[in-house]
Length: 566
Image (cartoon, rainbow, N blue to C red; front, side, top):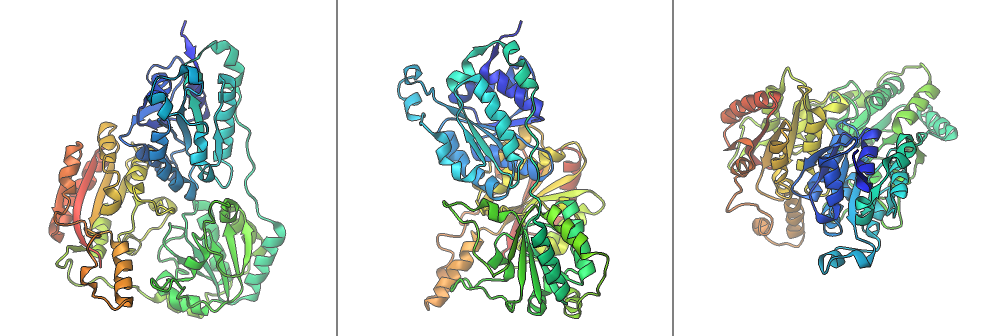
């Protein structure tokens, strides 16, 4: 007869909830959990080894964004959680469910080893990440652990969703239990939470605003579900409205008849009713911001406005996640339900596309230069075009990256699952781990997952490549190697010019050059097939054709592409 321990109960419970994978970086405080995954007496998720806690959490983040479901993550007491905290924040800002487990204690001081158990034991680990998790607990018995797991599962799937963290005490993990005593608890699933539905009066008010307008503009800035996207496109069609994507994620087909994204300045100036749908930040959604004054440069005329989404439900005294933005009606509800209700309230009337929006939709956007490269490397627009050519005829998903906004223009996203969106917290180190998670979600499907990976972000967590090689997670990593923290370069240039100083020294403390990192060689050291550095367009085309074929065959591949930041 198998002996059962507290950690065995937890992993069995996780498997029963549908958790297929648990990613971790090992530590003594989770040795019981680790053994339960390797030698389970019951059910258990598959263990995935990562070389940094931030990668483990980012994998779960990307896995959920790719539609793979919910992953669990195990991290070491205190120091492991400190490493993981950045990625937990990213998952919270991006509303991704992650089932977090952190080793704890022993909380009983009499049970601690000298030094290490003392320096790695805190009374309330959850306090470190409480402001950016949706459930925190530190149960002190196996029965309480199972109840906490059920509650965590319900909370991370209730809008606005996000990560949870359970402190798993060493003694709870390693306490022997009679499995029969917990059979009933193990068979009980979590309660089903209702979705965040729209207020009927607010829906009516937005419908009235749309009826009174002749040029409504819908602005989106987060990935939408396929259903929500279809509702939005249909609502724009019926109201004669324009559709503008700020860049946070695909929410309608690029080039749709109502897509005014490339001509947004004229569209924003013409709009007489503004509807923000899941905007990252309402002021940001209005248009560009001056880097020096920090003031919005919007063409919007201050017309009536409304917003739809669940951002308001995330506000905390610790941090308000967005600017106040324009005066507006704020409908706090899941976009899919809110857009369906507004569409129903509008009815079957179909208005022609507003003339100003028709003109804006016809604008082609920036043209690719004739030259494919300059002194610094391959133009990012040409990189995007080459990737689009290589992916022609295959199913694909961009898990991360926008290559200077050229990805949208060249890859022409048509469905929400073709672009999983940005890191909406802006935390570096996100891309490699999140792309691993997306590759895992699509493993075996034949779909090519592409990580358009900035070099600065990549160098925070390059060891993610080892996990791709070890667990054979198919993924195409294209390093956008402009050898600079380019966003900061833009800010430093603006400061220098404003102060009347020479911009010639802007690269000091910013350029990742002299020496330039050989990402292809680094990838090979982790067991990844790689090509590069590439700075010739013809070579890029050949390398992409080879790489796509390898990924379709189930391999992870990295291309190191020297790019120009223009």
